[in-house]
Length: 68
Image (cartoon, rainbow, N blue to C red; front, top):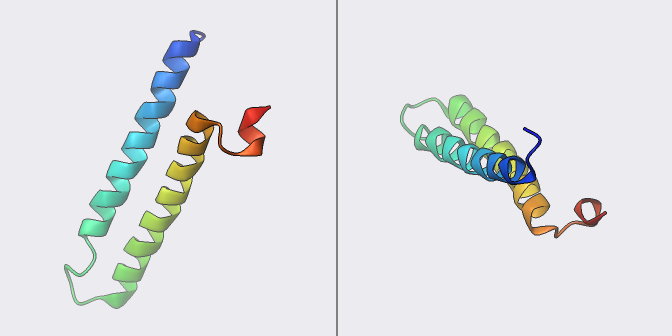
């Protein structure tokens, strides 16, 4: 994957995949009477959305680290 356009497309795809997975995980919250599982699902979704933010910031060059 040496083509820069392919790299950008891949980054965009991964960002969308991360978001979709976080939404799928959140759909599990409240499905059973098991608060510890709900906490695990919510924590997992939050971690994934933090990772998605890193991808989005990279794409937008909003963080100093991605501007260099």
